Length: 459
Image 1 (tube, rainbow, N blue to C red):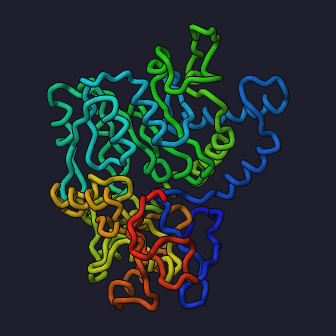
Image 2 (image 1 turned 30 degrees about the vertical axis):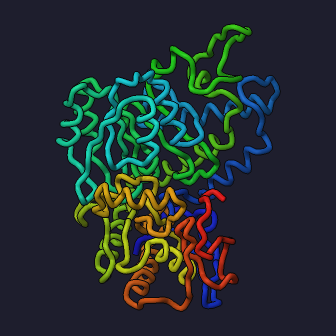
Image 3 (image 1 turned 45 degrees about the vertical axis):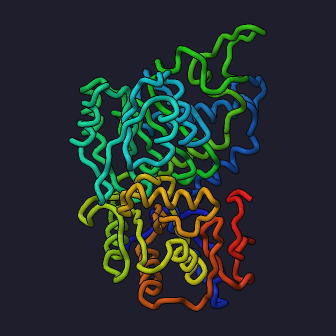
């Protein structure tokens, strides 16, 4: 039976169930955000007494904090594929911030083409389409594409200036053949930007992409920091993405002399605590070792995906069972809204999953087999304030503390939901959010509108 590789804060959390009992919480939402490694919490606790501003203070605390911050930067650069002196690591807020930062600093013209794929998270779609013209490698119904599909896009005219691609799907866990794809892009003089947000906690980041972005909150360091690693030359000319203190060498009222990178790219007071947390997570993953992490992941992925596929009434989305993926599975239960399945898993079984479209709407539309006219109808409903019928799926995603027993618990719960019909609890749907909650207010964790009224979704 697959054992945990490490303990995370909250692994022993006990939660109440609808039947009045309680159970240890099973967290299958690592693909969204992970809990903290104990080593990360310890490192942050040790650092906080030394916390201070960095780079500009002469005092002991400032000097000590600066050293910790720069040590974290060096560790991040190594983690990003053993990069050399021609590359730098820039601390950002998260992966989305890092990709927006890069899209701006590449000085793209509206006539430039950025090739990306339908499998991307919105964070690797929207920043590029704002700065340039985007073209897309499509996917099949199984949510995959091949190297030849990417090559066709690379060889289109005008030739793309950048290929922006994910290292692992946040919906299905599919792993595109990145090494071959990067080789094909570089043979054609196309730079590659890799969204490694889902890849980083599970596989080594490849060194071949020109730029890499990822987040600490998905790799057991939930203190809000992201990293953009790539060519120093990209950031040596021109104004930075953010303007402000720390990014400058000298300022007059009518001119500015920018600092050298990476300082030029980190205006304002940086997230020193987040950098320290990320460094601790990097060191801990290195101690566990990629061989152990990958073996753990592969065992869980097989158990999870094959187990779900074997439950009558459950539709597993994405690649075939023989295709390697991360320990992530997106699925639906026949006749039950994805939000209802997620609510039942939480309320009746103490299991946390994610449901919806996972910030990957075009990809999910392909996985569900929806055409443009169907998607347009759902879009109109959402824009009117009604999310009750928005299509989606349930996603279960594992981390390094997930065990084989945990997966068996999830599979048993899904089987009960799929085979036993309505459960012991009545649920009502909030049309604004699309979520289901127990009809009994005593069983709810949050206060929501459940009277069927339409109201703005940010109310």
